[in-house]
Image (cartoon, rainbow, N blue to C red; front, side, top):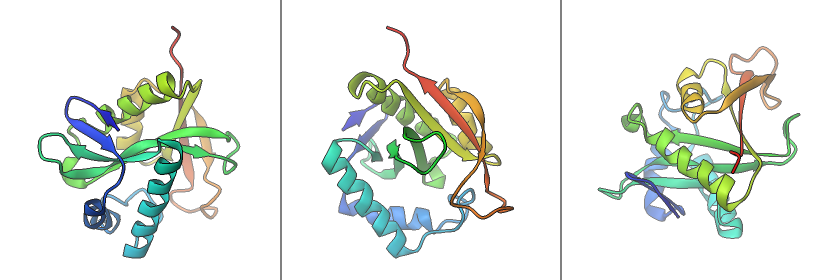
Length: 176
């Protein structure tokens, strides 16, 4: 579990399921993904990330507001083993419920995840990527101090798909 001034990043709970299913079915939240998620796909995602956190102690954590305990999305770290030319690597990613956008929550939670990556896991580098059209997510990467290192075609998207082209950012471990 990680804490920030306003947030708790924690293991997933059963009470997160309905809000996450709703997120996955919201066309605005899923705008920069190939499609909205079915209930089954959302539950499978929760099951997978929960298992990863149980096994290794970190991953895509559920994020809740400290003041209310309300689930607002996920932020965290994920190992990309062999999918990309720049793999293996650890990526940082986020997805929040629309009503919590533009309030600094993604940046705040992601900064805590980066601190964990560099100080607890002792990683040398963390990457992040998104569709080139996803300017809000790219803005979070920039606020985190990440540097754009290039663009690539996402290997799981068909050629000419409107989300195929992605930007790649990285942040190297700060010098001591």
